[in-house]
Length: 197
Image (tube, rainbow, N blue to C red; front, top):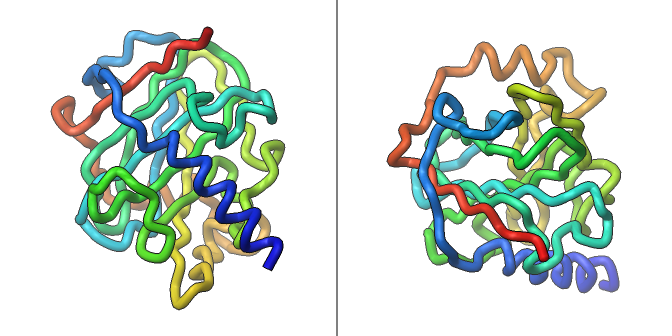
């Protein structure tokens, strides 16, 4: 029960993830920053709603905290695979959270909507450790594969074994390169840069 309460608390903290704000538009080819990440989201259950990706710094105190995100990107969901281009402010270490806002209501509906993290830590009823989600972004582009997990009858659906580190025979990169390309257009992506104080 305590784990479930801490999980719900962590996910409620993600409500900051859904706050509205000013946005700009762009794609990877139009990204004005020196570093960017193409996020390939696997296991999307429907074309309904939007896919949102949010970047946090490498500071564990900021991870999943309301108002501590650096960049937010949104695009229409595509069943199977959705691709998002996320511009980064500079080279460095970051953590990524992806959520499928299936009903486009701007809220995290835990029992019907999927979520995932950079490095694909094993999903459970508690948020993953920050250290398990941190990735290093250098100058130029990087591809990150994220596999969504959805709640099913009060339990998380299993992640694809091919995407779960150490448990599959096909690497995440091979899976991404063999997947059909569903690249959003510039009108599909909303990018919000969140100013740090």
